[in-house]
Image (tube, rainbow, N blue to C red):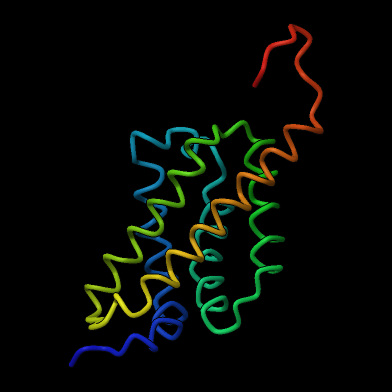
Length: 149
């Protein structure tokens, strides 16, 4: 029996650990995200899992401030860990793709009904990640050679 679109927050909560594990494996193995291989796995898993839980919360409450705080922090942290911005963006793309595939596998019949909201959440996530990354870059002294990061 197909699942209704309004069940997505419940699906996210119930299946976040499995989706997190699958997304984490994909993230550390993907050729476009090699910097993630050098990061502590438990830290990355925590952030990926939070991404799915935060989506469920955002779908229910549309709390933009919570999204801003979480992902600006994530962006600052990844800058400090020297993760290239392109890899950070691609990590979000991989997580979004994993969510879409998982929702289809779970029989979410009307994914299109929530696709716009999912897209809006991930768009905001990317914006705040990049903003946090840039804020950290602006406050970090340049290397003695004067080169950019």
